Image (cartoon, rainbow, N blue to C red; front, side, top):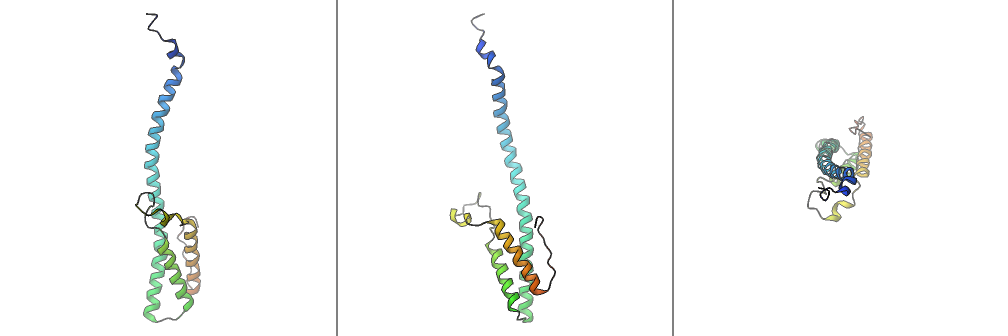
Length: 139
């Protein structure tokens, strides 16, 4: 009976249970972190695109109004074209999950592009004489 008793196993008993619990907790936390991260990313992505879509719709509407009525305000037309150009540069897919060439999205600074779009929107509103409606939550 004395030969079967391993004193070394008792010395490291607490560490053994700690290591097992840590490994299980780390795996469990990683799974839930991915799930929560995706949900948060989807929510924030929707908020950003809601804002960008508003700006695109605003510019497209004014572009159609100017085309239909033949207004000749070159400053406003320039702001409209530039705003639509900036909106078209905004990424529409998640580069981490899509098969996109690596150089296509690495150069894009989303925060900078979003600030440029907001600034161009404000400039367009000023040239149209319209009060801007800021759609950004954290503008």
